[in-house]
Image (tube, rainbow, N blue to C red; front, side, top):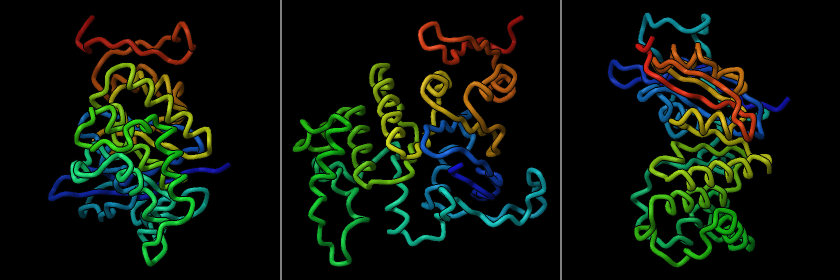
Length: 276
């Protein structure tokens, strides 16, 4: 089976261990939710997987889960190791969508999306003959074609998010990483975004998205990775992982998980843990 495998990733800032020996394995070609409380290490782990941050050695005396001390940090996709690739080569495989992209506000939508083609340019920065077509297709898929000549700075938060997703798709990646892609979006925009990610995954791209909303993860994702305190606490299919006991232990709330009346997917109702 084709898999995305993460091994031995850690991130340390000062005395704080943001990510502690993260290891997990999920099937490729689906949508994976990365969930956990605020400060769990989701954004840091995404940057480690993307290779935009380097894995650190854990402080002396730090225990590792399962005795994996000394495991060489690695991210492999279908058996191909990504972290050892040169930056441009890795950018042809992995695309990321961050929460903010302020540095691009002076550009038009088309110019922002075209940035996704940079990893595919020749050493002489000559655009390929099919680059314009790829950019047009990415804008069409994300519904931003009509915004092509608008400045990114004039768009709403939801529109900007779709433009950033179009840029990532223009990279033609095999692995797409997104940090809170539904943040600050209204309900309709959240559903549209997750629906689009499912369409992207159906083309064979593996999607990993950090999400705050467990119900969005339960409704739209295939697998889930649960982080708490910088450690991977659980990995597996959504209906196997998002169960009341784990939710209470991770988030400190009482949870009831029922079948959605329309879809049959897990639907989670929350209440305070101190209720009788």
